[in-house]
Image 1 (cartoon, helix red, strand yellow):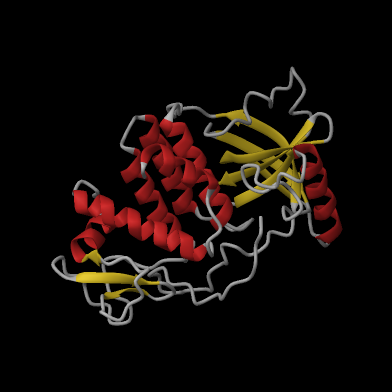
Image 2 (cartoon, one colour):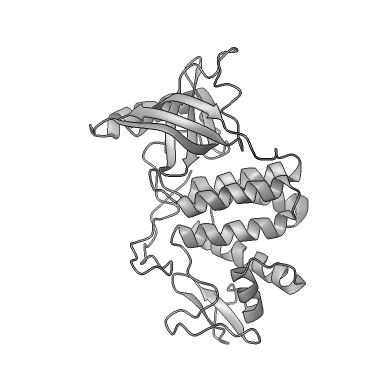
Length: 303
């Protein structure tokens, strides 16, 4: 991933206590030598990427007390081959956020982990270790969610890429985890992908500190009015649109912002304007680094 530092403004999530937000493009010290999300580092073979990831983790991570976690709800976001029979899996968990785990023997034909460590399956994970990359000790399928297929499956990979880009390791986001589960369920039940993805994008940006409320103006706190036009100023939030605003900033109606806050994308104008606004914000916070799955969705579905 070609990543570089960007300014880190104060986190504004609407909560009483605010801490600085994380940089969506700040380098991850463990995976910067591994294959990029969804295979964009073509120079590294997957197995070599996994070895590089482990070697780097052992080299840069200072000694720390060993942690043991049991039966933690989670999902596999991405996986790399490691050595002959193992995998390194990047998982998203309820109480620990993103965690990198070594799944020893997971590539063996008769391994119990082989069928469990699949994308979009709710699993209970147990691990131990003291480094940046820990050792998976147990993984069990939990069940209870519909499978994804077709366009819904592609949308699921888009969700995973967003989580990999925006969520740093060991940073818990319980509300975002619940929304991820709900989003997968909605996709599995065949709900329109466009509205489901807009909802997830908004929650992701707000829960990770990159966006504030959509129904109130930044600074003044006054309520958004449905009949007025607004822009979302990066690093600040919603405000009234001005003639001098950059042409790249999407102008959206107050009604669109209110609909987005309520997860209501039934109006055609709301669907179109929310799509433009989310594209703009994601592009801004990723500094133009393209989302591979997003481009595929645009090409196939004009989302």
